[in-house]
Image (tube, rainbow, N blue to C red; front, side, top):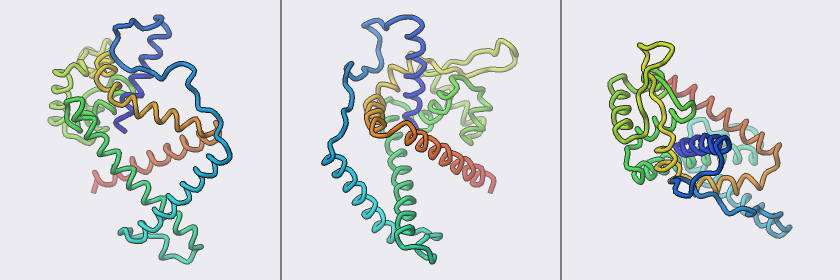
Amino acid sequence: MSGDVAGAAMGQQSAAEQSSGPPSSGRQGIVEPAAGREAGPQSAAEEGAADSTMRSGVEELSRAGWELPWPESPTSGTGPKERAELEVAFATAMRRTGSLMQLMGQAAADRIGINNTDLNCLNILSFSGHMTAGELAKATGLTTASITGVIDRLEEAGFVRRERDPHDRRRVVVRLSLDKAVSDVASVFAPMLRDWREMARRYSDDELRLIVDFYGRVEQVFRKHLVRLRDE
């Protein structure tokens, strides 16, 4: 997700600040929540209301799912109806989340002042902090000419810089400009990241491990079908 470029920038910034001391008051970037602001335990009534809301959400998604085109719908099988409805709700939730992620990426790109493709490339670059043009082209599926244009625009805007690989002078590496990413990108996604952190406090460590494992599996599915669509 495009918000990951903010997360990566925030993580690199945090590591840099720990080694160099507190940031100066003039530094641009993300304003973290006030110290001591922790989510307290929820009352039984609050937990009950949350569970009721979740059940209602599943039922609503299930009803919507019956009307959505899905050629391999589990509702056509012979399994338990409740399981089939949950699987339809799951697929519908994934589709809605995907659409919202795309809309969020476009809105963020508009706010930052770059196009959505360039923001997505910046996001992919943020995971390692540096890649060659060829590696970025392979990761995105863009042509060499297209990726050159992306890098040119991002470099002109100050988000990346081209450097010679010290171990192979023939190799050019595209490196993320951390300060620019923090000030112009991470600041746009910071409110959403704070909401994610607040949401994560609702779950135990084991539950979060399960969620992280789930998203890892989702990533594998996406990668599999990216390859399929590009090779067909």
